[in-house]
Image (cartoon, rainbow, N blue to C red; front, top):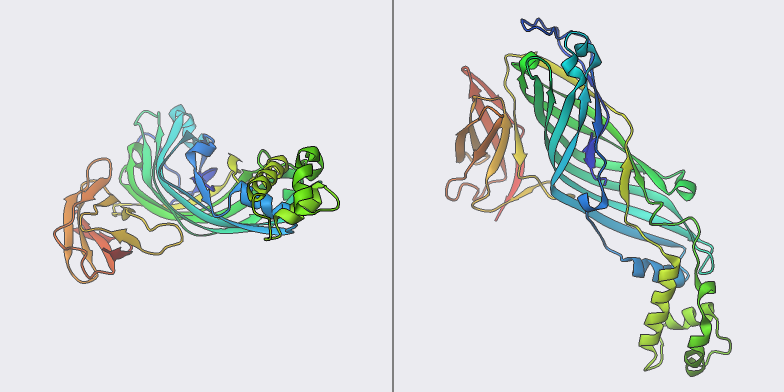
Amino acid sequence: MKLRRIFLIPVVGLLGVVATPITSASAVDIPAEALDFALTINPLTAADLPQTCDKTPTEIGAAVLGGATSVTITCTVSNPKQPITGTAINTRLAASDPGFNNGTIDASCNAQQQFTINLQITGGISNPSVSVSTFSGTVLQACTFTLAFKDAQSSSLAGTIEVNGTVNGDTASFTNSKKIDLAFTADVYITVGTGAFSGYVGNGKFSQTQTLDMSDKIPSRSGGGSSVDMSQYQQVCQAAGLSTCTADSLRTYCNSGSVAQGLAQVCTQFLQLNVSSARVRVASVRKAAAENKMTLTLKKGAGQVRIAAPTPAVGKTKATMKSNTKITLVATPGATCRVTTNTGKTVGTAKVNKSGKATIRPAANAYKGAGSVRATCTLNKKSFKSAALKISAK
């Protein structure tokens, strides 16, 4: 299941669940050995993962036309409400109930990623060819998700998938394929189980790979200065005092920093024309994702709580909190949860609903002077805590 996207970053792939020894009174026995949930995630489009880069296609093209042999671009992808849907199958459980062959995955993700690409350019203006020498970045993503099945008990597993780490791209095949394979890991927490999974919670690790396809944006070979009709620029060449009027000579002049008064606009039009011909682009679309494995340890009779929102911005380690910022918890249904700061103040309390959600509304000045918050929940006289969320209070 991809968490991003990358850009992820949703979670894609094959879930392998390693459960502790279980005895189940339900019609479907949950075996102690691995349970493999095969997931299919609906692909995302560029509209699902908008990105902003520190260089525009025009700037990249101008660098190529200026004779640059490398260009570095840093891009940020952010979508606070990215939906993910797909199918889920467990063939082992389906042996007892065929409904486990008909499941779904439904998730809502705060998908964020910041990545840096180093493009290497060869062939010059007449025949530019682009390759990627390095691709690395940071991903910070939090998803709440549910696997729901059509078995006799309408069984489900729900919780969070959380990524806070680095993404590295395998760029070896980019020159020919214009694709980059990415890999990262995520933490998984199961907070709610129903039906055959009733009463179970758990946690584990998820390793993911996915492919970013740039082939539509960066062609292997594209026309450059040689395709430009220079006859319309003869007067410009004469005014600039150029002895020969070629795309290369005019490019050099327009990038020299000493453009004569009155020729700046023409030079801009010329460079843009060349950029359009070179067609250098950096936007990308996730078109495929490999199957991956999620390993979970499930146990019964315990609680689980996670702070699902807010989350830090990509590249940051702290969540920015205003005086009225609400905190969303994902936890075991029926638990009563209290969020406190590291300074000992109570932010608020709430009871977790049957869907495993709770919203904490802050008391006045609750975040003032605080550096982190944590949730502590109680269920059946047992307590359990979330990890601390670092905050920056405004």
